[in-house]
Image (cartoon, rainbow, N blue to C red; front, side, top):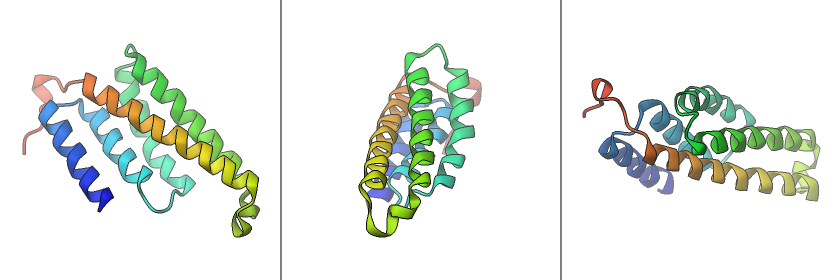
Length: 130
């Protein structure tokens, strides 16, 4: 229920605010990945190209730089967690700590991307309508 309610709320928000399309798609895809019951490392592959496109267009905005750094750090912690994957069956301390830190940074990334979405607008020639 949280996944669907959040998805619909973000969709309405980006349509109402006429948020830049690339930022909106990155935000909504990020939301779906963050609240998914399983966070497979391959899910980050969905976000990385979208984020690169969105942040490149708004690099002058501090939120874009901070979000890019947060996403890179999230990816690095995911890689470190996968190196300790043998601990998953007994939830070893190293694995749990890495996943916890990764998840906190990932949520921070989502908040930064939401902040960027609230600051950007789609040019009038590219507006999306329902």
